[in-house]
Image 1 (tube, helix red, strand yellow):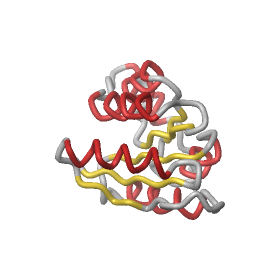
Image 2 (cartoon, rainbow, N blue to C red; image 1 turned 45 degrees about the vertical axis):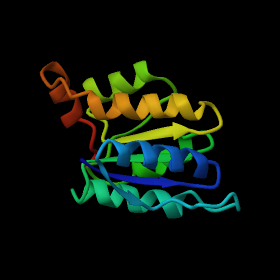
Image 3 (cartoon, helix red, strand yellow; image 1 turned 120 degrees about the vertical axis):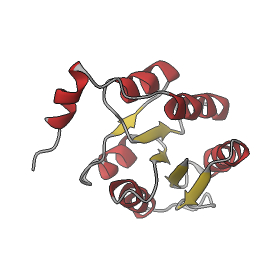
Image 4 (cartoon, rainbow, N blue to C red; image 1 turned 135 degrees about the vertical axis):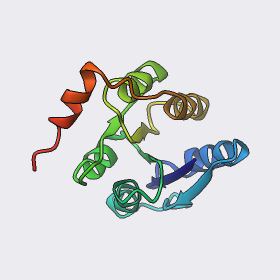
Length: 143
């Protein structure tokens, strides 16, 4: 699987651990995130991930910022993006199974790195159920 990842200054350690996890599992990673703790604008690192997913150059995306909110809001401005802000694996599983989320937004200031890794694993391993959820997904876009 090919995964795009992006993060702001709240997430370099998270990104590093997640990229290592993904590569150990044999996934390819597009890294759009910052590697420093210097303050940056999260939007500059989230738009490239959303573009990768929207343009189908990757299978899924992972975005990381302090609260996860700004990252998710930014990504969700892109067509065909369903970014889900999640803080535990149960919500991750529901976001994939019921909402066909294609980007996972991780709030670095509210989950630990081991929790984030577990969330990523759940994100990759949970499939969209379709069925009754498909019509709802089709009603999400405004245009």
